[in-house]
Image 1 (cartoon, rainbow, N blue to C red):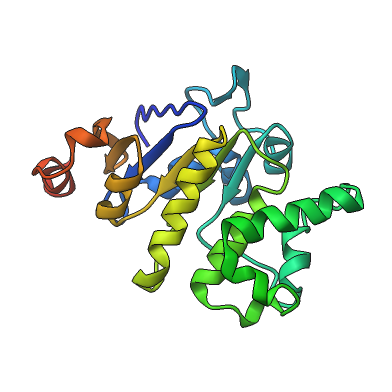
Image 2: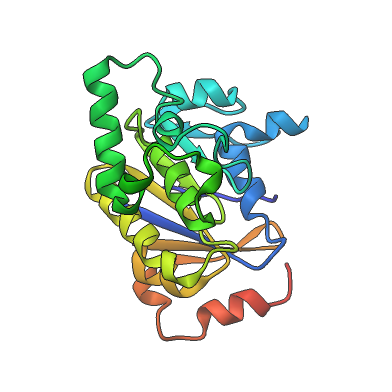
Length: 224
């Protein structure tokens, strides 16, 4: 990655787009501290959350400071129930708060409410993604990053996922959606950044990208 700079404010949805291999996942894993699990780290620049520097902090410390991350892989605990998955990061919550957390997730994704006692491994891919997002918001993070949100999922589950991102932003969270599919991102996000070859090749309000050739050109332009 080379001089990649991103910013997102509370109540805003930022879309991070780009072709396969553009550096999207590396960027968000650097932000969230997950590069440490791969023996790598940020060597130049800083990561800040609400003015506090969190560069190269351990992932569990990043979570405690209010940055939630839904990775591309390892989304749920398949043997645990949907309810237990939701509460996996909220063990310290009191009973009433745990019930409220489950209700909030089911309100965000109503189709999970009928599967609440089932093993998460029995859910469809789209439902597992909903569950992973639900678990991430139990502690009401300041910011949420979802990596490859719709990758491999049936198009029918795309709308509720994107609608949930907008709802979370309206509640005050800063939301970052990473995806290879541009259409829904451009309809949902307030701003977007396009990466290619480890560089930012375009950024701005999504209104500037809709109905034009800028996105396509950014995907196909020669690397810098």
